[in-house]
Image (tube, rainbow, N blue to C red):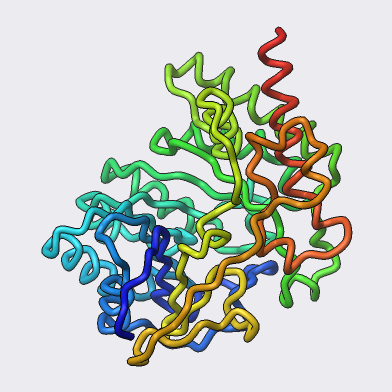
Amino acid sequence: MTNKKEIKYLVLWLAGECNLKCKYCYAFPNFTHKKMSFQIARKAIESCKTKDFTLILAGGEPLLNFSLIEEIYDFLKRENYNCKIGLQTNGTLITEKIAERLSKMNINVGVSFDASFQINDEFRGETKAVIEGLKNLKLKNKRVNLNCVITDKSIKELEKMVEIAYYFENIDGIGLDLLRMGERVQNYKEINPPTNGDIYIYLKRAYMKSKELGKIVGKEVKIREIEEIKYRKEKNCIATHYCYSSLGQAMIITEEGNIYPCSSLVGDNRYFIGNILEDREFEMQSLPSGKKEKCESCQYKDICKGCCPSRLIINEGEMEDKDCMLRKAIFKILEEEENE
């Protein structure tokens, strides 16, 4: 590789393996059971044109390669990078020692957790270990966010997730990740997308619960997708593309150095770009904007950023419109709040 790329969003898969076997995991079919080397991580970081971008440490389960996290973090500080760093983990491996080390790093930690103890155990497993991990993070004063995969079951438990977030006290927000119908999830007939009606009903209940509890404790746990649309409305942000992948400014590097434009498309040869260790030119791929033809007639077309391009590629039929239904539900919830 001889030229640097205009990358705004870099994802490093630190481990091509995981200690869980989540039923809906889109990465599972591509696990190599290998770990990323610092050579690959450094090459990926140095391939970015500027030192100011978002860096996500993921996998697989990135804490299986915790020494590399520390090595990457030290390198970024030493070389004066201005990265916003995020770590996405299942939380089961967060010991007191790891929590203490994370507390000393300027890293935003996201812990995957599916709404309630029961649902999380059913779809992900090892819920007790996740709870211990969250307790350890709290003990070391490390603030985190929770991320929930939205299915027809988890959507109905979002209120419980809000209550859990308030209970731990060190949880700032909740993110919602709509189900991707990848290869693995299709083996489980009990896992289905939420209905359009349920998205509005249960998301509103969770939002109202968060506001209610926020008044009591003096700090509100934010729901990421709602806060994003609030911001876009307040600032009158005009949306032309869904994400950096749709702008050709996102790069996902697997543990072996393979390059893709989106984590959800790893293993799909149509979107394979090359390998970061190869000494040759490569061109970044731009995914579709996320805007569909019918978006032109929507009242929210300017502010709404549309649908996730990779989900439109992976999901078919009814599932294609879940992003749209989620955002329309949020616009409706916020409009009702304004009119109260």
